[in-house]
Length: 344
Ligand SMILES: *Cc1c(COP(=O)(O)O)cnc(C)c1O
Ligand code: SF4
Image (cartoon, rainbow, N blue to C red):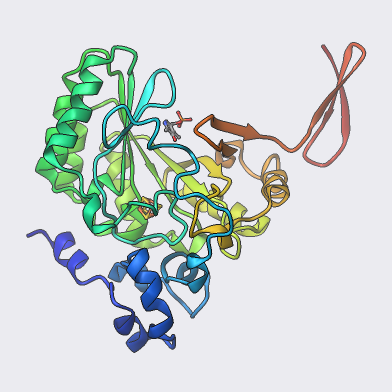
């Protein structure tokens, strides 16, 4: 067993263990954990400075998760867009392959909390084979996104098997891996993993930092190893109330990401997911945050702010309103709020 696998085993999964370390009431957490499992890696646990801080809120269960408030378990209609289990085909030319069902930390706001970490939701060999066959038989697919759960929690050989099968398909041009291990279990990024991944270029990794506190020396080291293997790194942040719904926090986050060679790609408006409603920040807040980024910091640091339209209708980028046509002029508003006329 590798070190990261040993470390993963020593994660906190039981409210009583958490209560030994922090003042909290395990009895109130138990019903939540029965429905939506808890796992906090030792690394991520170490980032908690105090009860209720930005890291705590992301990983410690809350009774509010049991409130349903009209929200749906699968608002993006992923199940209906699955031609075969563990594969989502929503856009013409790319698919999401749910290659793993577990994560190093179960994020309380996860948009797949209906299934991620649930005991009967493991990805079986037959399901995986069915999904790989779908990719092989569907020439329109030129981009395969490995997601889950966290694909980097698969052992190296299983991941290599999947990548090898995908790479053999002539119409697949690129592969992306979506993973939170650089944040939650950075020791998973080993030299051996990087050597293996390097054999499957063009390969992209999108990771998932939500707060500047998550950008640690260990995370920087993990990202550096991936980048040195020639893998372009992007980041997908979720806009989370009480965690990062603040222009200053978000600006610091995107700036720090560039220092560890990670390019901010998306800020996601929180989906209307059952069990995560308490994390939803208003869209107006998201637009304010975008206003606080564009022009005020490097364009390289500025991601797209997207709403993933309910029902699986796709990601739609939102911009703070900055242009209006007036006759043959486009009146643009710059980041300082100044009006600029531009001939069309
Ligand atoms: C987000 C997503 C993608 C990838 O979208 P990009 O905008 O290309 O990054 C593909 N399929 C599904 C189902 C998605 O949710
Ligand atoms: S790492 Fe991603 S898939 Fe896993 S719980 Fe967090 S948000 Fe969900």
